[in-house]
Length: 416
Image (tube, rainbow, N blue to C red; front, top):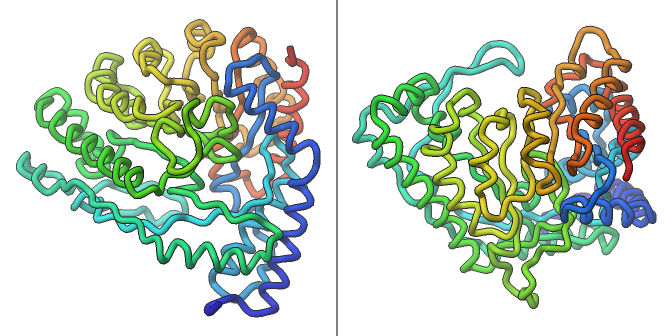
């Protein structure tokens, strides 16, 4: 078919794909997949360990030489080299599968508002939000998105990937970021309104905030219902990115009555978060965020909640999400208080502070002590340990390699 990479690019991609397929065929991949399924289904396992280099990839890949020239081929080459690097150096509990994702082509008209920001001059620096919701009447600018699946383009993209990989890797259709379905309405609201003004609005004009959140809920539900009606939803219960860090394996999805064919919301994982509410009271978190997030999440089979916001004072409200399974416990949350509430009823997904990776001096003994302390304080819980938001490794990629090795060594000490 047309627009294929050159023969040289195809050779490079297929050789990399063969290496990925060989890794995916190893027995330990099936063993880890089973481990994740038991873990997410609330069976007692050792703590599972993942690392997501994220912002550190520019340092890990600093000396990579990309060979392919075709734009799609370069994108695929980077994906494959990233997977191989993870296998050769990180070796966490991630599961390798012989698949390549093909995003479904979706046309979305959006909400009618574009966020605006003023960026800092520093690399990876902060930015200032320029409010675009200013007057109360600006709520009228918010539109319900119209979502249309372009199946012709999707099938064309799928066929092209199948030809590129020539049966070496399977091609898997996905919605969104690798099958991840999420919603962060209050964080979106803050990007339109500005953080400081949003906090004032909670006190000065709460009904207006509720009106905006109602529109955001209606819009997100409309998006999901359109995808479901057009048969675009895809199962996300394998090595899909799950929540704010995790792996999607579970035997409890799809729903028991699923017999193949179009996927429904109740066959899927979904997540929600309100990171901007880190320091907002439990009562306000419930009123302005969870009231709406709960309605979104309970449409699905299993739910994740949280990301970087500390939730230890809000877990009673969070746990009222009917289908809740995984909860993110951030570096700023109280571990003991969280463990007392979550126990073995939910997956306690702990995010250690990534500052230990970025610090001036690397301290492996401190890493070991921190992880062992966590494991000791969460005995009886079902836990995973996920290092993410690693914006830098201080140009020492070996720190991430060592962190995984240490975390796995400690986790194995706490196997049931």
